[in-house]
Image (tube, rainbow, N blue to C red; front, side, top):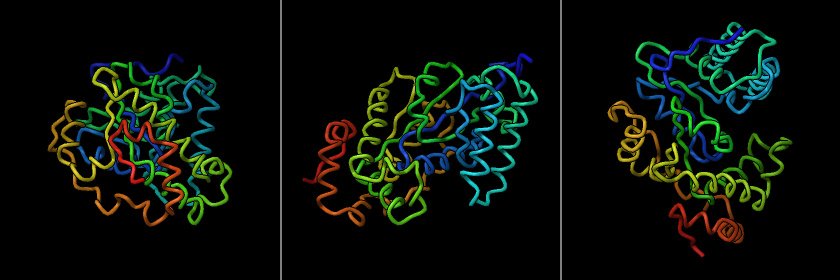
Length: 274
């Protein structure tokens, strides 16, 4: 089958949220989803990261993520959303259909999430930052990226690996040292720095601004999305989440992070303390 017949004039736009893990993407999703014109998946679907695959493999990957990666989570609404998404993809494209495109994902998002009055449907996943080229030039898409102080990001990553629920997971090994986590932050921040200008097609915000200047930051988001800023709940962030690396990292680790991320730290206005 040819897939969903899309009407760009009536279908909600696609909203893609990314950044760095432990960098505030969940907070940002919550603030965005508080607007009555926006519908986002209640947890990370990640489907847009698996575009380009044959539809059967795409469906299998999304299903694997739901049942295995999230098997310890009891989140009924997310389960319902995912199965609606999979049903829409298979119903409209056939299980052995063509390779999945961003447009196919977008249409399935709209079919399973959109209600009257929704102007945007979408998903958040930090690593969407590494797929930005698929989104920023689409006229029916908006992309919002969030960057956070690398010391706080890396401290949170290392804490989850050393003492939290990421301990022992094979995918987390490459982030289990200051070197590995710093390399990850640099890769993501480099992309965001390249997109941090008015003509990029994306909007880049800082976690710290979202927390300390919520009203002004959500006004920027509203302007980018052409929405009423009053629809956002801008008070969801907590200032006690700032500079938490001081509780996790020793001075040597902080110094090493600052050395490894110095250039991009300065680009985003983060000051070294050494």
